[in-house]
Length: 342
Image (cartoon, rainbow, N blue to C red; front, side, top):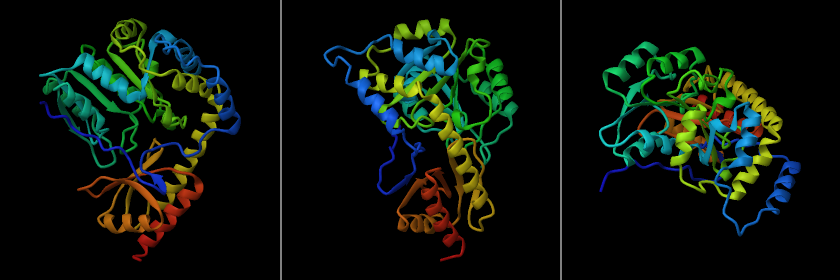
């Protein structure tokens, strides 16, 4: 039996700032619109396998033709789908270290090898070194998150373009789960320029829809026509698609929440950047990544305050999701006590 890398899902209670969810939720008006729409679903029928309403809604919101889109059970499923389509035993996936551990999970399931390019502590790296590393190691696919999870570092579009241009003969997959929180330009603007380019997006983060597990794969229309023919039917249920379609019609609300989260991210970073016991890095995502040589003591103080953050065990690293203002205030108070040595 082949060995598959495991992935530990976030589980806890209290103030959960460990899974990068949007804490702001949806308005009561949108919630009622969702309830009314779901009530009209014919539950005796299978879902629309063509995902027509959903793809048109997302395409309209993003300014992308629906022919360039495919939706699945979270962007995780879309990542697993492209890995399974293009990789297999003896093939190599090139990614960054650190990056989202689900890449290892899916690659190991298809017996592909994962080669990792080590980044600096803040997530930065020399682009030419990464390109050389991937070529010298015979990469069969390039895949990384942008903004990066966990560092929050985001490559500018010019560097994404250089990577896509350097690897036109293999798939280049950019995981943009957190791009909504960044001021950088999305790789979606390049999908018609590079036939090897694929981009994944999700409603789980910026749209606050983690519960409905809805994500997207985007590429040029010719690529997507081939991939749709290979994709599992009924990947998304009718309820998730209907909810997503309603929420996308109110994308302006998500936009307002994004600005609120970005403002809170800046506030928390400014409060922590000179902390005597924490090395914190700025971010283009909805979280902050840091290090502390006294991390165990820090985590204990946060635990006493009822806060759970992401702990990268065996390292000095941690990640704090940006929560509601009152949640962030609790975090800052606990970390202020930590800085005082209490």
